[in-house]
Image 1 (cartoon, rainbow, N blue to C red):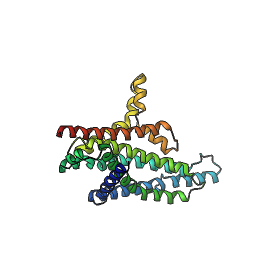
Image 2 (image 1 turned 120 degrees about the vertical axis):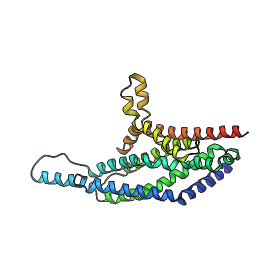
Image 3 (image 1 turned 90 degrees about the vertical axis):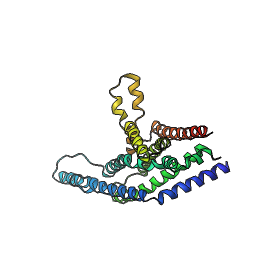
Length: 269
C-alpha cells in the first residue's frame, strides 16, 4: 500500500507541475476567468440583473404594489454556478485532451504501459492532478462569489454553497475521467478534445432526447443526464442518485483508461 501511495503521489506531482508549466494552461485559465468575471457582472449589475430586479421590487413595495420577493443570494448562486458548469463543458475537454494523447505522441505511453506501476494508479494520479488544476481555476471565481454574497440579506446558508460547488467539482471530475479514457485512444489531442466534447454534449442533453423515447428506455436514458443532476446540486438538493451517477462516471473513466493501457501492454508483448 505504501508503494502504491508513493507512486500515486509521484505521478500526481509530475502531472500537476506539467499543467502549471504549460502556456496553454495559462491561456485557458485567463479566458475562463475573463468569461467568469464578465458573466458575474452581467448577472448582478446589468439592467436586467438581480440588483436591478431588487431595486424595482423595492420601488413597487413603496408604491403599495404587490410583487414577488426575490432571494437574491439563492438566485445568484444558482445562476452563476450553473453558468460555470456550462462554461466548463468547453474548458474540460481541452484540459483532458493531453492526459494520454500527448504521452502517445511523444512515445512515452509504451513506457507507462510496461512500467511496474499499476495502470489504475497512473490514471488516478493523472485525474487527481487535472481536477486539482481545475479547482485552482475555479477558486478565484469562488472568492468573487463570496464577496458578492457577503452583502446578501438574509445571508445564504453554508449548505447551499458547499453542495453547489461540490456538484461543480463532481461534474468536472466526471468529464475529465471520461475525457482521459478518450485521450488514451488516440495520439491526436485535437481529436481527443472533439470526442470528449461530443460525448459530454450527449450526456448533457440526453434528458431532452429521452423525453421523445417511450417507456423504460426513455426513463433509463434520462438518469444518465449530467445536466439534470448538476442542476439539482446548484439548487442545494443533495440527491444520492446524482452522487452515484457522477462517481459512476469517474469510476468508469478510470476503469476504461486502465483497460486501454493494459491492451497496449499486451500488444507490445
